[in-house]
Image (cartoon, rainbow, N blue to C red):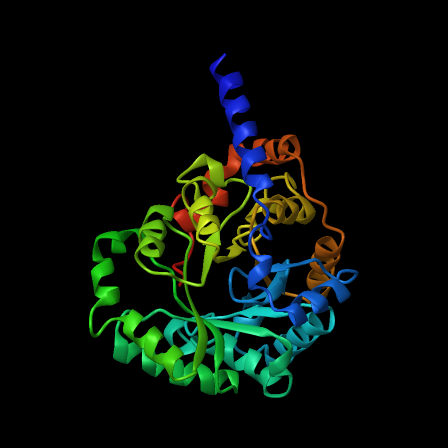
Length: 342
């Protein structure tokens, strides 16, 4: 009986959250030119408002990890970025910390690889995308130094979005330092005042409670949060954080959709289409996924172009498939072993 009650309650919750369209109440913030462009591109990829920024973003976007952050794969990375833009992607996400250790390079030495590889394309296609990066530093001076390096790496004079990178659970009681005179938020505000960045955001994949506290303290424009089909099983971003971000009319970007491909590692329990459709049915503006090879990119874009929202029962069925493996599928919340990441 209890299981039936839980199932019924979950269905009701999903129906409610699905009904909260990413577009509801946000169209007044979208520039007429952006709306017309989105309608013209509807046959290529559906677009949604990126919160109150006035930008219409494709529901599928390019993440700056995987091949793009790997030293020695510059040519492959450049081809992926160019192909993504050619196929209609208009939002690219990266970070100052993105870079995989390779060969003799340590993780720290590889940082910036993603930005540099994206910059190889931005030098001649900057106007075609909304460009987002991040600072993992929590101080004013450190973040400003990172921003200077980020702009140089990306070969641009400004970011569309600059974000506080990966706010962690252990920082929940330390958020005051973000807002101190020498804190990261002062750097973000200064950079915005000087035109180096247009919008401000925050990101995290470990703890929704900490991120909820942060966005309740400051009117961020955007949030990047971890969401996948196993989310409900532990410390749920969908339940604890997503509704708050929707109420604040923030741009909402989903990540960890296939859980670094772990979602396919248990006998193919979930396809990429199921993984993407599950998250895109939620009131998110877009999702970001790192790409290893162009055929993966082409498949994901096809899924996004053909996207139709799922019903609550279809969402429940996907959740049930992921349930037995949820610890492995939510490694980013500290539930299974994985190399440390930013």
